[in-house]
Length: 480
Image (spheres, rainbow, N blue to C red):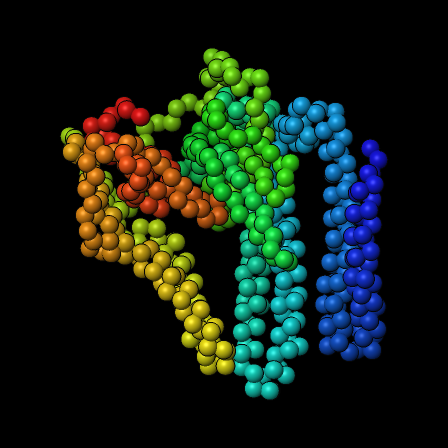
């Protein structure tokens, strides 16, 4: 398919914009060679950084642009062939063979880490000695950028180790597409045999990905609109590979996959992971979910039996720190302090660093507004630290209603919600960190208000099980 006039203009303008970067990169590379020949290694190192930066931006972005142009032409051709079947507009969706995004994530991590560190380590070498000689202590803050660069480099190395250990995982779909109101089925094939002690948690998520721009700034926000999860304990070995069955029932009111607006997309994603010695396994796949004529039809018996068998009755994991006591028509649930230890430690480390910077700023001669603003944000972070370590919640559900006491170390007022004032008890996705969702238990009152009876639960099945305990205490077994 021929390139459109609009595409030719766009690629021409981009090429004109990037040519100076390419020219500077080539010139810096030539200068590097000249300095190296005469033995001026300091100047050679400096010009090499410029060659990599400008040449990388110029030639790298040109390569990405032309690759994107080829993909756009191929996608447009597929759209013209299948105007009413958008799941055939991507080759991997059409074939039902979807590779995990881990390899591309690794490449992006390395590209960003190298680009960042080239700048972050070069600028202090050039700027810092002169600034300190002039007594500008505030210039020491520039050392934060190399520190961030080391973190980015560590992430890239971790993703590389994961890729080398597990290779590229593939999701082979049995349903192309996943039909709204019916099911999404398939099997994940890893590149090695994996045997986690607690199985594979598998999630299907519907995500709204919004890209917003303000001037030269670009931010990406992903909001989970719908999520279902299961734990697969019966993976099979196929040669050297691990076969992880995937099967989810799709809700009738689900939104379709939609990438027509790059700044506001609906993405369906299958995620799985496994905790194993060394580098943990993880894989993510974007999958096609669309509404078709079959959406109004019920699942056939064959399709229903093809879905994974019902999971065994949930038993609270021994590692869970949430305490549950049950008696006839009474459930007592206690959420202790510091139960999400990893989160508590992480936010505490961040708070210590933030506070240190806040106290250092006046000594470096920063304007007074900076320590004030940093201090105000530090108070918010400090509150999050205190709640992460000290907040407890005690819930009692009986036939007469639910009592909730929430406060630091058990101190706090008691709230009573009568049974006839409770419309429903449901689950909310409270927050999401990386690939992990944290769930909140929400009590919907008759007056429309909501009360939370337990937050930041990392295991969806445990959160659903806790809701069942509350419903049982209220005498609502079997009601929905």
